[in-house]
Length: 367
Image 1 (spheres, rainbow, N blue to C red):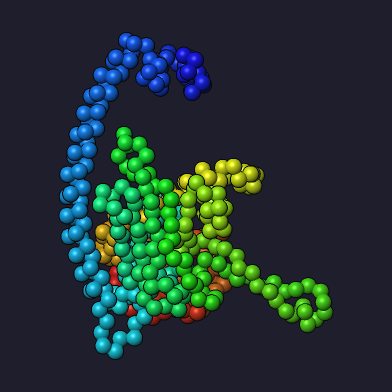
Image 2: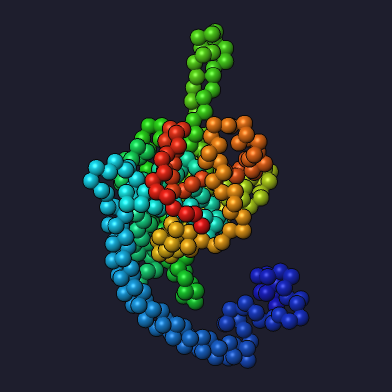
């Protein structure tokens, strides 16, 4: 009774709750302990059965993965086919913007519930995405895996591959699913000068000092949301990791999404570790969705066949032909812009380059 009051205050008065609930077996009365031990014996047999089943399932999954890898390799080769004389710079010349379109079409199917989203300024970068790969870290698939995005040569960064590794552990043998402990970016993204889409550059004029100094300006990089914020290192158990600018940005995003008010956000960092664990869980969840959903049904997302039907789709692409009348655009979308919404675009067209609209690469119906 006293143990229960200490571990779960306010519970011991409930009439339906046994006074021995949650107590260690050694502290239970003899008659209760005997029953519990018998039930534990049954549960041990169930655990053995489950482990045997998981072993068989793992063998089947490995065979399936081998066959899936062959198909994914064939898909990659097909997408990389480039006709003689073709000047297309997309990562997938056969279907320019294949992965960007698939990711955008999937939308809320897997990205809407996570911290990361594809912003308009991310699109031209993702236009150069060639393929996405996943590899497990161990044979038993208990220690995690690595997710790799492969890019062709592009004007944004030097990397040909961007890989994030998720480390998982079985922390409780009675819970089958491994728990993600940390994630690690193998190599930082080497952004080219002025091409980092994760920041925006603000110019501020210096005040005072005469006309010459007043005309001088200094720049400041201000962080902003981006799909590429998915590629970070995060270890909730490490204060240095939690306090890094990249992680702190996502922590603030998480607090904002959780409708935390400014006073709560400005409190001491005592809860940062807990929020960081939530951020890690969200990023890992996105990685699994990319692995299990996007990679598995990429072409069906590309065509829209795998997407949930939208109730209202008549107004899509309205903004593509309105670039010459900015005032009209602002009037028509002012209410959406106030909420941070962005006009929908034709995803089969190349993203804007230096403020200019790209040419359509192919005609294809959106669903």
